[in-house]
Amino acid sequence: MTEIWQRPWWFTNSSKPLLQPTWSYLLDNHGSLLHSHLFSALFPAAAYFVICTWFSCLMLIGPSQWRVPRPQILAVGHRSPSERECVVHTLLLSLFFVLPAAVLQSVLRTHIELPSRAPTILELGMGLMASLLLFDTQYFVWHGLHHVCPGLYRSVHAKHHQDHSGLELPISLAHLLPWGLYGGPAYHDKHHKSHKWHLAPYFIHWDRLAGTLAP
Ligand SMILES: [Zn+2]
Ligand SMILES: [Zn+2]
View 1 (cartoon, rainbow, N blue to C red):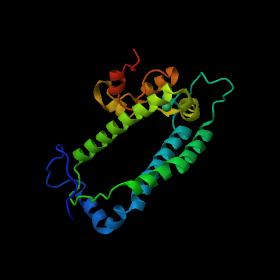
View 2: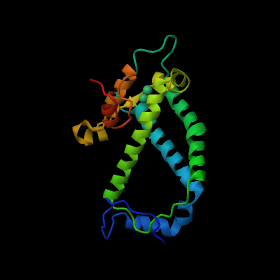
View 3: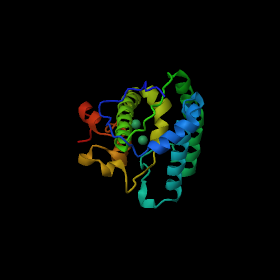
View 4: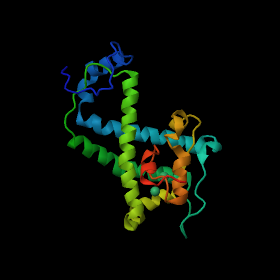
């Protein structure tokens, strides 16, 4: 298989990655599926559904101390929806927005040939961290725009603020990463209470730079 995918500088040269047997098996037996547009559209959407379902189950049946308290202050005339209503709403959003967006993204993307060598665990971790940092950046801008433009806030983002819920799990990146670099649920919860601070979803560096980090 041709190595047309350029490895970033921080990729190591470990001779035998732990994931190599699984990686080779998948490429040798399901290579055409992995490279297909159908797979690249359905896999992220399916992963999103599975992860949403898992967290929804934790929300419904998990220990109550893991749940971030629902907002006390709601817009006049707005009833706080039940957990069940939130689950249905999330599923509808996933079906009508996430799935079509995944299909569109897969159709528009250029063909990517997967390398024959598997990534090491370190490379996988670095890749995941880079994805989180990238998403954090674009979401910070997108989220900030919704709070700056009243029309955008009312028509799109207000629903998220009214239906706010969350989980503070005992093991999470917020507890694993040092120096409070990762804000976590408590950090995002402060945004729901103030609407002013903490616009980034994960890390705190953009809020620090933009002056939107709570004093
Ligand atoms: Zn939120
Ligand atoms: Zn917001």
